[in-house]
Length: 44
Image (cartoon, rainbow, N blue to C red):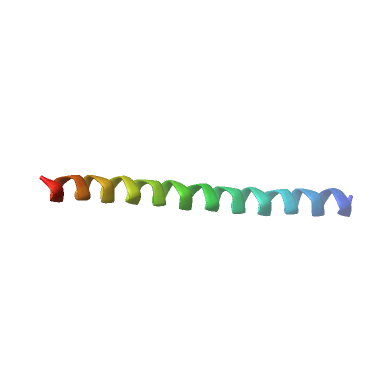
């Protein structure tokens, strides 16, 4: 029973990490998109 609890706790931690990484990547992509737009506007 303890083993099942440990595994479920580990999987929750892993999901949180994955979610955090996904959110970081999404944020960076949004920033990159904004920067690209700024660069395009500066060229004109």
